[in-house]
Image (cartoon, rainbow, N blue to C red; front, side, top):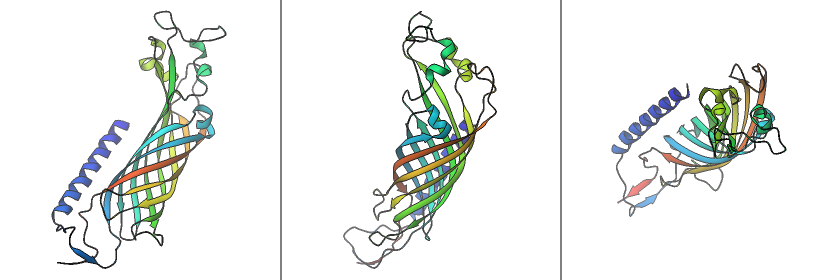
Length: 269
């Protein structure tokens, strides 16, 4: 399913780029030395954005994971009325951030005071575990210009609805552990899937210069998830319960508008 989503996202990016190139070709270029008068106006433009951030999980997800890193890729459209329409793909991953690793893998560990998982070579396999999350959502929002900003910049808020998947990935760093490889890993990965709602609030800056466009803010998530695996070895059963997951992400992003920018001032030559 996620492979199809990635392919669809790449197709959408290609369409946006082709549109932008055609639009840019028909707009005359203005020399920097030209004298400009007049007021800035709101513009309509598609854009691509990438963002980095840090996420703090709560609820069932918080019981399972410590905080983790996130990377976002957005396709969006800003209208002249400062409305935003955004397709957001988010990839989140941690670094050895699973809280209850010993409990989940207890049936694979030695029973001494410092338990570990024995590798094929008979030594400590050095198993680490980390979260890996994927989400895809569509959002609608609006920019509210401030007195010191141009009419295309200001406070931004968006509301998103989408789909979330999160699970545990295991990696043996010192030796092979067949019990955690290939299909066997599915019996310990706690894969969860479900619908997600999120709200972003922050500041969005769109400059007259195409390379100085950015946004920063905080995004809150709530998801209703359910285990997608039919069986987990340590539970000796599946899990049909529905859980509520919460996340709070701090994000900073860079935007690439595809406007061949139309003149919103009067130029004298």
